[in-house]
Length: 192
Ligand SMILES: *[C@@H]1O[C@H](CO)[C@@H](O)[C@H](O)[C@H]1NC(C)=O
Ligand SMILES: *[C@@H]1O[C@H](CO)[C@@H](O)[C@H](O)[C@H]1NC(C)=O
Image 1 (cartoon, helix red, strand yellow):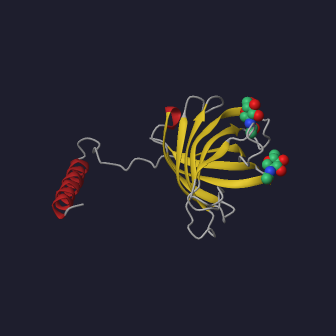
Image 2 (cartoon, rainbow, N blue to C red; image 1 turned 30 degrees about the horizontal axis):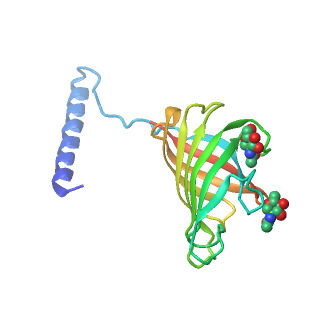
Image 3 (tube, rainbow, N blue to C red; image 1 turned 90 degrees about the horizontal axis):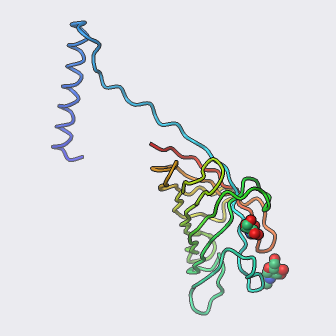
């Protein structure tokens, strides 16, 4: 805040407080004192991403495909510069055959130059098509450090029931069998 704005703000606060004090002393009417709005409550939602990383022989079932990378290097999540495009099922339980509630669309980019951090830039829009969040989207954007079991990534927005959503998700890989990953996602967010 500029010093001019801070001064204007301070004067405004003094004025409002003064008015409240006078009004309550006069016991004239209940003072219209500004009360801080209660903090918006934090919502939680848990869902599962069913990711199948393309490995050259599973293209018919894969939903996470490397599409570009550094020339001469392998296109893997550990190899700096590799870009993956994602269209993964979102399900209600860890079972891949449990109720499908939407898709996670977007990209993953391996961003750890030395390859030891397993850091991945996540840019995913979760589009919910059934269940309690049907008709809403939730946008997750940030860097996920694959070396951590629990990986927080910011929620930067949403639409529908999730309009103005802010908060974070925690990604946790709960199963990995070859190219098949099941990732538990717990979202903590507030809306307006
Ligand atoms: C690719 O995935 C398929 C299906 O899970 C698996 O059978 C195969 O062994 C994998 N190939 C490599 C090179 O990892
Ligand atoms: C994603 O959902 C579709 C529709 O239910 C299903 O056919 C497909 O096998 C699922 N993919 C994965 C990887 O679970």
